[in-house]
Length: 250
Image (cartoon, rainbow, N blue to C red):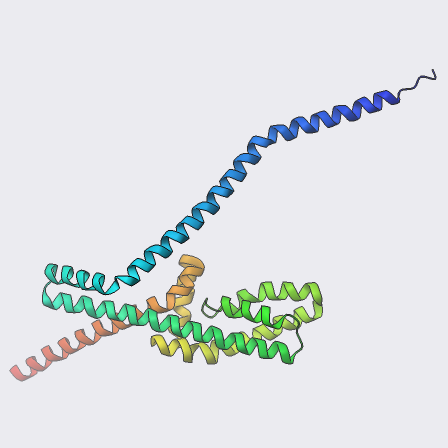
């Protein structure tokens, strides 16, 4: 009929804009709640780290006094034999974890250096950054280099997909060298475990407790191994002694 209906289209646009604004305003409380939750979690995390740091400083400052007081407490509660046994176990745990941490950091440093040298020789980009990632993730025993391969390969994939593939091959070779040569001699020797026991410990620890279990499995297995060996040796000596008495009596 020759009528101009363009004003209806304008009205439809205004109606859509109104609905969008209405939907946006309705989501504001949810957005504010999410923002408050995130802010609260960040503040809580920072506060926990700060409190933990302060607590650690106080513990380190008074560790000798705390150690002496704890020793006096257990000495008063336990017999002399049990107290000496407890002190021996404490020293075993402290020495094992200390040796493991030192060995793990040394091994991670060695692997990071080897990764940097290999990447430099093979002309891979971002050699320093990726080598640092490989070294840090290597704190996780045996499987650390494989975990560190993922971000390294992704970085190289953005630059050159072919180099990313060769980088994965390079890390697999590096991981084999680490698992068979470096780790058993550096970390395994520091905790007194053979490679087979290290693999068993990591498999069980990772299956039960994930990454944390993989990190703590080796020193824990070392402590269990020493305690079990000590118990078996005492039982065998007792059994041999009783057999000798029986033979002498006969």
